[in-house]
Length: 159
Ligand SMILES: [Zn+2]
Ligand SMILES: [Zn+2]
Image 1 (tube, rainbow, N blue to C red):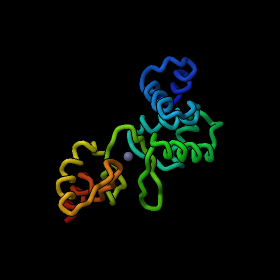
Image 2 (tube, rainbow, N blue to C red):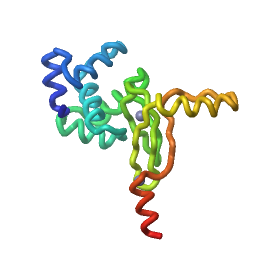
Image 3 (cartoon, protein in one colour):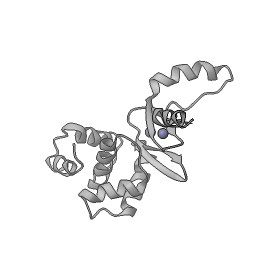
Image 4 (cartoon, rainbow, N blue to C red):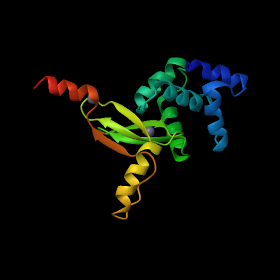
């Protein structure tokens, strides 16, 4: 679904499709459904990754030029406080992503690619290791740094 559909479905109010899911998340958490919020969620869902505020604003403004940068800042902050979004720090930037599906992050330090690993696949493996040292890890939002497949192959070829 394209971000501009956010307004259409929003206006329709029938809670259909991806946009309907986003609306339901906001309703469940007691947040008002506003055009900036729904569009931010749509953009992130469509991007399928995490974005910092500047590119996020650029994409939102493609559809709704009246949504300014400070509105995007304000809304990602509120939605992060309510657990709709979460963030990871990379290279001095804060990248925001949808927190609805619990996941951890794989970050390529060479190209900046950020991939998600479902939490239910990683948690059991880590839990058994960490319980040995009496450590309880947060169940989502961890950041694992390394090199992606492409960058690994590129550096091998250069050798
Ligand atoms: Zn994430
Ligand atoms: Zn890479």
